[in-house]
Image (cartoon, rainbow, N blue to C red; front, side):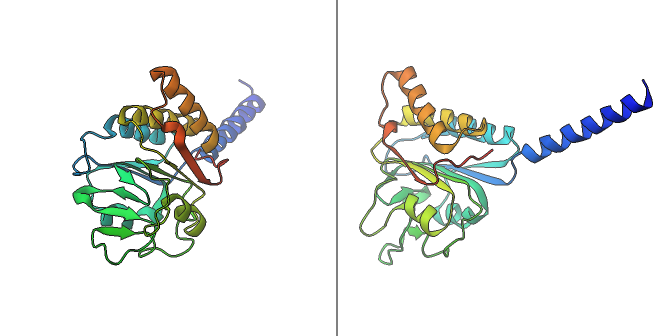
Length: 226
């Protein structure tokens, strides 16, 4: 091989390597799934969270997965996350963690089992977070006391986007939805495009939406995590 050709090849290899590094995702992603709450059921989300973790790792994220964690511990590292996800039971304004402790937006001083975002974080603390996934029933609803998790995560704390369900969802169909959602996000889709594709895929598989079509996106729906 001539020296000139070798030099061109080396330049191309360096350029390609730089492009790959530039396109790789990086940062911490934490995924929580709960099974031991008295709110009902067991085994919520394990298959979905395994798939979510694999999708995030495949594009370069440091993705960690935790089972049955107290709300205090689940909340305390959120400002370090580029992607945060919790798969659990829930209701308007809250998601349930281990020991029936909960995470909410607003602080409710009369509820000692609740760990609010407002009591721990200040405005803009989630500015490095691209996406928060609140995978629970009714997590996108607003409660008069506990507030709205998705709105507070984005509008107040500064996360780029957040997704949750307005209605009660089927565990099985929601698990499939989140698998599809994170696969599409990791392939480069925006949050809105990934959610739409995941909704269609869920219906095509089960001939039902299982209420996953009640998802709501807060913040910038054009956000991409890759």
